[in-house]
Image (cartoon, rainbow, N blue to C red):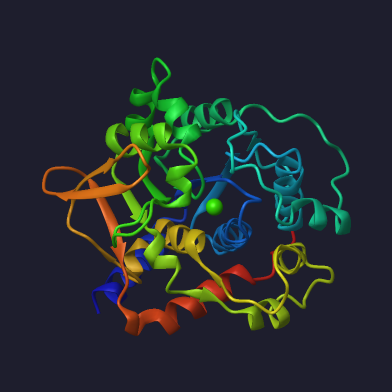
Length: 315
Ligand SMILES: [Ca+2]
């Protein structure tokens, strides 16, 4: 009920104020290591088309040479060829995979291949020039946000220009150190412990419980052949397979927090141990993690697949 009330209020605000600009979003991703980053990028384009947010740039933490051309190809497919893309600044061991990018580029190559600026440079410029506070969706390693934080005025810039970070990272249900943390532990520690704005975590345990259905790939993307997202999914693993929606859940929470798809934990701090384990300490602090009510699983999966497969609005 509360979610409905908030939706009505938001709609009233939009109607009363046509100049109301949708919240800017930066997508910081390790695109290429797993397929959920590609589906999450498709979702952010769809949500931008719907006027629910404004994707203003993509910054990478996967240094594979196909990562920048791949992201540009997807952005072009969704009608945003000029969207700024920042290149990864470091090749991280175990974090520079190419599960589908080169394969998908074969079906839709990028015409020009101009060099991309380093991701922290792009991040800094996007934040500086944004009139509104930005939401950062971080679905890879914390390398770029840590680089910003460790630069002379980085913490001040983040505090002034970032509303919230929603990070797919960590594991808040016990268990092994999560991949996005394990690949760059120092950066994760810096960001999770020192970043000056609230952070909401979608932990490993959330996306694992919500499997993206292979049937959606087989049917919902038929409006374009070849479809770069469907081709990527098919290249990543042998079809048919369902895949956890880790990064999609972070994108959804970042853009539609008022829908209450997930429950947010009480506030606290997050500590990162030397092995990459994440530990939540309730109390003082502005870190929260998402919790999933299993009864909402069907609804959330339907929303994720509808948004990820929404055809672009051609301009
Ligand atoms: Ca990812």
